[in-house]
Length: 386
Image 1: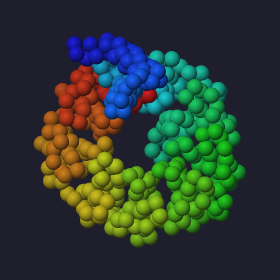
Image 2: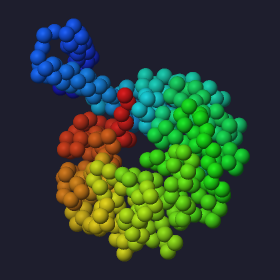
Image 3: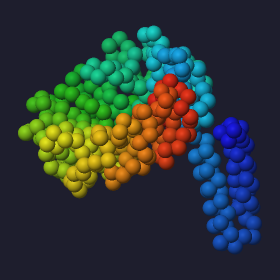
């Protein structure tokens, strides 16, 4: 009942925010005789209302399947189906309010109403990773697509944002992408402006992360270039990960892995057999040393959490943990932030996580409370649409 009332009253709340904000602003503009302290209070109230309105107006959306069906659709945090399940596969909504879906063998772009957005290409062919089979969806507002063996990007409205002329183009990240054309490397901004990368011998590229794009030279070594096409970290590593929370994992010549900063210096010496990316909120990364999985912090301290029977990555400040066959979530001190009580769960994303109870899935918050009761056959991560 409370959830229903929230969604009924939401438009009225937003309207109230808008009206009150406008009235207060008009008072300020008319230069009413308010002393400085009162003006500061009024201004603070305006900002609170406006910012509050923006937060409330965000839409949280996630993919779902319902009982007895394998088709995917979308629901909101009220547990309401907003797009009826009818897709063979559905992908996460972008911040701009569009998503990639698959029916049979045909990809389409849809909006929050479930309407297909016409695309200015013969067929929507997104990039599919040859090794993992993962389909790349929207990233930083653009979708990488192929037509006639050439690559470019579509915008959320289906228009061609980046011409389909490249031999390969990577996902956009914070406004930039790397592209290959006739064995030359270019940095592309979101207007399609090209910056030629004058670094000889680049044979492979990966997308940008935190302002640095990954490159591989003829000797098989990996490094990074910046958004101006200059070498930021010269190719010297056997393998590299993307930057996360200011650090990227790097594999040294001996096969061990550590973490480097954006100057290419070792912050955490290469001594691990396997690693994962850092989580910004917890300050921890999952690592394997001497055959055992644990965590390392940015000061190179390795921790092993005994509360969980298995080690999982941190995401949004919490890590899945398992005890006596039940799933809960650990904080960065190895203590239970959410007690083990679920049959299964996904990692937190945007402050929410999908969790399973009695063979049905719902959404929990970081206190372990059900935000969406477990009524769905399956649920994916929660996305934010502005």
